[in-house]
Length: 356
Image (tube, rainbow, N blue to C red; front, side, top):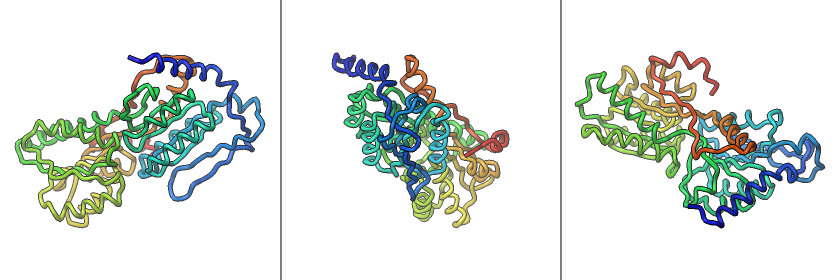
């Protein structure tokens, strides 16, 4: 149950929302500085609060977004979804920051958003914990926080309004359920099955959820042996490094579970280097996550058996939450984006429409 102090803080936040139109950040087009940061795909838009106020700008909803990085094709697509959604034409001013895979950069960005008095803060946390203090600062400033993509583990969940993203545990379960069905179809249900898991960033909710979900299904099968679970940071380079070590250590890998497509590409390179075939007609069953177009092409050719979608196009869903808040609507604790499972049998129906 919320304390009186917590209720008072929330009421203060609601009062801030109601009078936001009178407190808009004063800016004109000439006063906005668009700074393209080198060394990554992300863009950072900084706002200079020095210009005069115009009737058009004062009506814009100012959204500060801290993206955790640009470590993968999926992340780039996620950023593009945000940038296409929060445009001036749609009634928004986007203040965007690329944290380059560092939590301290995200905390710094959130504090910058608070000082700029943005209307909403949206961020995709690099890891689950360590956010309590800065989110308390946002609440004290009366700024609603929306968590995007990955989740949080904090004591006071009222520090953020909602989370928009994927059900990562369900994704992991779906991978395990697909493997159950596939092995049964192949007449291999009773065989000893040796599995290697390439995990993502340590401490990320996507890594935790996908791992726990798959492990829950694997625990049903005494003949499923997880040889190793190792982190590869969701990157192709790290995945190559880890898989080169793994194929030297194990010569009997039946299944690779790779928690994103970028890592899968690195693993496929290593298997090819070592003369190990993969996929539908190969030696190793490959289960991947994210379902970017270049990976779906490998599903279509049979190199990857199945790709569990993690939908990056979350910008419209975040905007829907903001519109509900603007209209005083009731907000759910979580909003999950729709996702599919792709195999060689169905991928042809979707691949040509893939934009990322």
